[in-house]
Amino acid sequence: MNQLRRIKRPRTPARVALMALLGALVAPMALALPEDREQPIYIESDRLERNGLNGVTTYEGDVQLRQGSLNIRADRLTVHTGADNQVQRVIAEGSPARFEQKPNAEDPPIAAQALTIRYDVDQEQLELLRDAWMEQGEATMSGNRIDYDMASEVLKAEGDADSERPRIEMVLPPQSDRSSQD
Image (cartoon, rainbow, N blue to C red; front, side, top):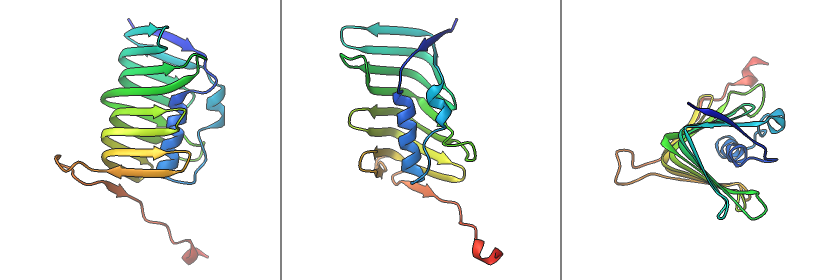
């Protein structure tokens, strides 16, 4: 039976990672819904293992994390914390691991997925690895790997020459011609 666990953290790496996805896909947009930060974090999984000596907590088995509009689903979620108990790195693994969050009330949610999603909180680096994909509304990006450096706002994507999809693909919806409506 899945058990609901509540973890109190002032700033979740999952939320920060999703903010990075938002910036990577459609810059410059607003960050996540402001009220998300004030919501409790709920994590459900089949199993939990916490190693207090090395600061690693691993959730396994249909892992679901919710905080406000933020939703993360993975087969395995690993959270690394430092001596100060602050989150340093989060790794979500699945077939695929998925992130979803609304940037603001008016816009559609940001959705991202990859077989492995890594976020380094200290370095502000997000990596979507193997079968990476991001979407907001009709805009999408896919490739074998998508890296986003939030501090410098640098987005890099690459394909895999040895796969069926050797190139990256980005689809942007057409801009509406507002000048013709005036």
